Image 1 (tube, helix red, strand yellow):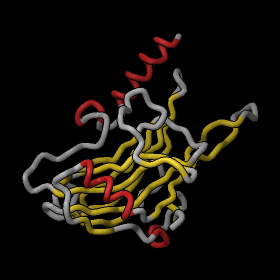
Image 2 (cartoon, rainbow, N blue to C red):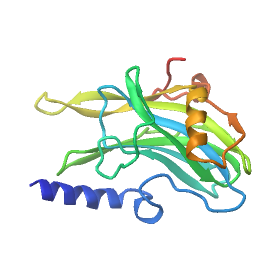
Image 3 (cartoon, rainbow, N blue to C red):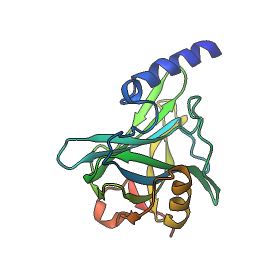
Length: 206
């Protein structure tokens, strides 16, 4: 049974957007004009899913990608970059082409072996940021908070979640620079969550 569950998980994960063609984690641009997207992605204590993705795209539609963290996930081999204070997660540095971008949606993946669920915002949103050649842009810490629902029998089941966005630049940028030696100048573009207008994107603790 355990072998079957693992096989099913592999098939499902390979079918996820970006997994087969661009690697399981965030896609990295290889051009010489690259810039760097810096963010941290994690979950509140008690929230346990198998994957969290933040989707971004160029405003002109010419490039798109994702930042990914696999929490309870057999494929995730990155160690936690921060843990404590009711949350844990990783700091991600993604190489992408320069230009004007927006973070526009997310995906939370839940794997129950023979059944999988994906949760996203029903409506896209826009968290804008700009990537400069050779420079980094920090868009904040995104912490997932799980929510529960009930099935037909009244049993509590996972029902998705929302994200708390905070500015943890001092911690995250220091970690990012250790991970990416080429990263030097990093600008801040942490969202004013009040202007996002999406109930699944909320302000976290300062």
